[in-house]
Image (cartoon, rainbow, N blue to C red; front, top):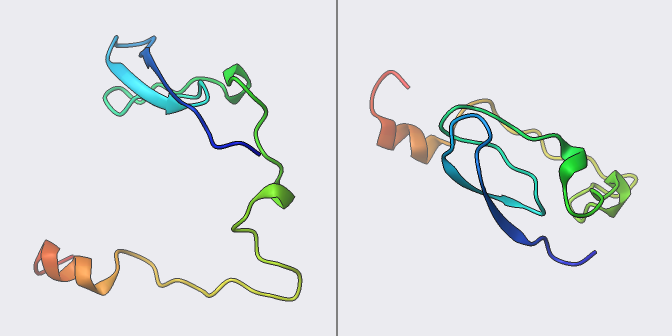
Length: 78
């Protein structure tokens, strides 16, 4: 599949200028999200995902929360 195209629009709820990929948007200000069907091209299938684990391979479990180095930057209590 070709690389996604960066697209820009105004949020339909609050008017904030937002950017998205292939006509799919999510506003970080008010939380509005357009429907995936409004995109400019079809979404890839799971088997087209380059990060999909191959058969026989399992994903390495990830610990919950931020990585240890991020916790150090956040300070005590995080």
